[in-house]
Length: 336
Image (cartoon, rainbow, N blue to C red; front, top):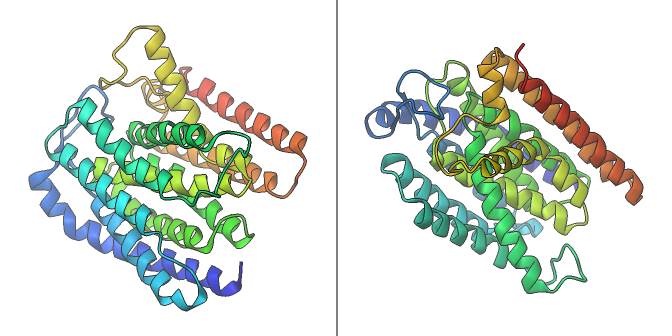
């Protein structure tokens, strides 16, 4: 990757941060009237708080990334139109759910359509496992993408939590793009999303003045999933697993525990490890701080895994990542 493309990514991050902050500030009075999140069984907040800042974050991401890629069009970088279209579509679905709750099955079908657009728009020669029949691989990726979009939504239940997760992931994707492990377009979109979340963060720090809402968490999950998929397509499957490993572990283990207990997994709850941590005496700042620090460690492991072709080393990196994630989840599940 050239220094010019890295400069484009840096500019994307800065512009997206400024635009996201301005849009969030401007949208908050409107969201107070049309999209107020009232405390429920899942909530970590105690007073009604506006949601919908995802409009600002996603708008800033797509506008800035699209403009920067268009500016650099002569260099051969192309706007991922299918990804942008799917992101806008799932954002609309999320906003509709924020304003007036959508039933579970229609919501999943609509989310699945957005994920399918991203999966099946990829060129046929982009494969993760060459020995696997293409229709099986795409089908599995569709299910994995749908789960990933929803787990990002599930985990967006604490002030600054999504930023603590997504900022290290997107920053890592930018660095890996510079090292040549993802296309330039992916690097620029990741930089814009990183900047947009940083611009939103001052409004979401404890105690939050506004939340992302489903209009933010769902498309953020889709964009993160697409970035990680690009890593996997380029042979860095270990890195693609390591970067979101805390979210994958917390959400998946929590779902499995609820299924074993025959609890309705789709209902609002406070069973995630980060939620149990606040119930066990951890402050919100302490939880998001430790999650952010963990994600920095996972990012280092992910980047290190791309610098070797040795399968045993990649497996060692994954095992180390699993250990540090399990250690934090264990600490969160115990009272201080």
